[in-house]
Length: 142
Ligand SMILES: CC(C)(COP(=O)(O)OP(=O)(O)OC[C@H]1O[C@@H](n2cnc3c(N)ncnc32)[C@H](O)[C@@H]1OP(=O)(O)O)[C@@H](O)C(=O)NCCC(=O)NCCS
Image: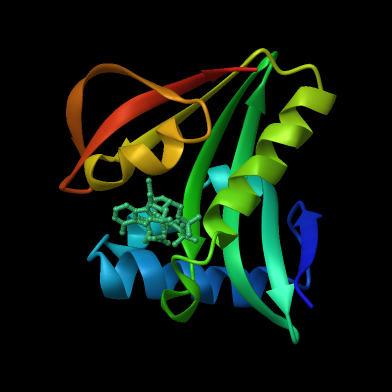
């Protein structure tokens, strides 16, 4: 059974969630580790799906006034294309709706924009490089 948890730091979940993020972004996508874990982690609300004590998926939400930024969306390689990423982003959208957030933004890697379009996001602006990877800003009006 997959369980949704949400937490701010410090948290007992953090070590395992951090390990999942490092595996996905640093090992798999070559993001420098010093960029991957940043000061945003101290401020963010973290979401994760946990199964048998291990995180399968994670993301973080940074709130500022009535806006939110979703980031660091990662699903364990072994569990992709099963709808888990969609479910977790949907949980983050639900959270934002409940907390009177008006718009959600995120920087999507360009290969995966359709994943976010399917949840109602639209692209805004030009493609930019973040950690050497092409991204585009995406917005959802809640
Ligand atoms: C992007 C990511 C979070 C998607 O998670 P997921 O659980 O596999 O996604 P879902 O199963 O919910 O996918 C839903 C739909 O999104 C699209 N999609 C998902 N992964 C895709 C991929 N690698 N390439 C193209 N489209 C993809 C598909 O339309 C998919 O539907 P389908 O499986 O019926 O074809 C996951 O692949 C991941 O962790 N990637 C590495 C880290 C990353 O790129 N994070 C995003 C940063 S912006």
